[in-house]
Image (cartoon, rainbow, N blue to C red; front, side, top):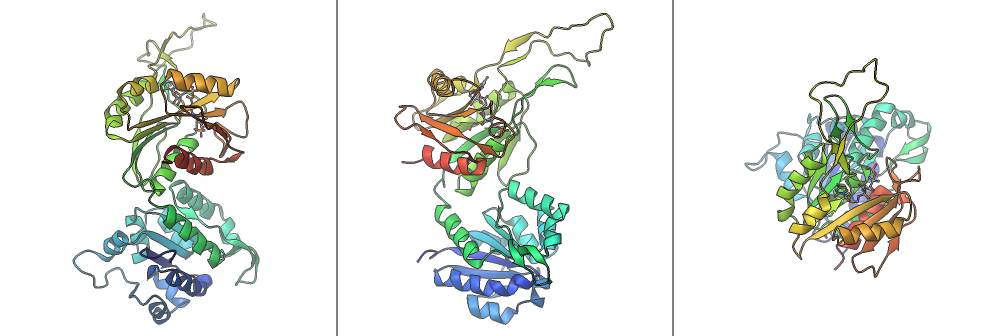
Length: 396
Ligand code: PMT
């Protein structure tokens, strides 16, 4: 059976779509999953504990301080489940989850949960379009939650629009997809770098670049989702359910990597690293001088981080570089791969506005050391590229 041995924690919040979850539970049970349901107090207005108990053949959990063994309930239930599905997710619960509020068993559970979470929102279409709800959804999506967006149609409140709970078949399929792929990177320690380095000029200015970190975050999130122990080294402050280390400069990045790389299985270097840094950083803010129309800032070469890391790499470790080019993409990428002694290089053309830097999309060419299988993607979401890249580099 598709889900046999899998433990699903199913959270139901207060919304009319809660009645549809009985059908989702039947699908899970028929596929062999063990399902435990946790309800917010508001959900009880729409479904009964008796129905859910009968369908799951398990205790139903509602109250935060219900009797458990010595471990508090929110830790106990979150430890044993493989996946948490929250459907329907109300605007109220989404807001609490996005802000770390734990005022009931369901919100406490999700805060303590460090495995994949699927959120299937359902609400009135105006509530769904509300900018705070959308901000909360974006925040959760960026933190690795799987969002199954509501569908368009007739709503229980009489409105037409986007707000209906996604079809339970869609939620079921997403659950199967995540649980089946869940662990292919289990046991691997993967370092991902993201964002553009900032090389200081004086206390207020720096030399930077347009990297938003989106490509690297997508790779780190995907690696985590597939069970890897992830260490994300980034120039941008982010909140992730795995280890993150904030750095600014190329030299700081090299120093963290020198320490972290020996204990890892792979390094994926999507950060945009400055090739040069300022030779002498001014202690004070550089003042505008009335008599000078030009000032000169002398730059010195930064270390080539990948080249340095490749020197300490063992045969069981993988090192993957990215290559940002505006011309002769493949030729330059191959030359960088050879020069830096990489296992793979991922080339992207950063002259195109709608892909590469800052965009949610990219087009990449993945080149292996032997150059035997050069693969160019179509224009895809960076999250999709991350999935494809991890499967490619870790395929046996
Ligand atoms: O962050 P986003 O907005 O999502 O954009 C994604 C991206 C365009 C930044 C990303 O896809 C990308 O291309 N990253 C690599 C950027 C880059 O620095 O490319 P490069 O061709 O200059 O360098 C080649 C490789 O050497 C890179 O892996 C780089 O991290 C590394 N490098 C570069 C300089 C240096 N001194 N040491 C290095 O190790």
